[in-house]
Image (cartoon, rainbow, N blue to C red; front, side, top):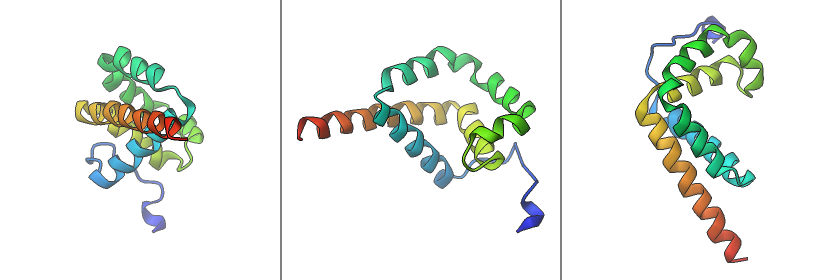
Length: 109
């Protein structure tokens, strides 16, 4: 287990399970805070730059990893998610769905 603790494969594809877990986590946090419009706007505005930003995240990963609960491994997974157009689309759709669920739950209270 420790032999893989400090190795990263930035080019290996992200598993569907990890991708779904990350998307659900981000969408849930955004919807709970009521920031879905801002989050979707920021994603869409920066969509052309996300692949470049992903490369930048690799370069500054030692410092940036401290902001992620799972450290560098979670940073690596989020970076892989944001480098793919499909991942970005799934994230935006998940944020919209989660926000709608929160609105419906609030109406039913």
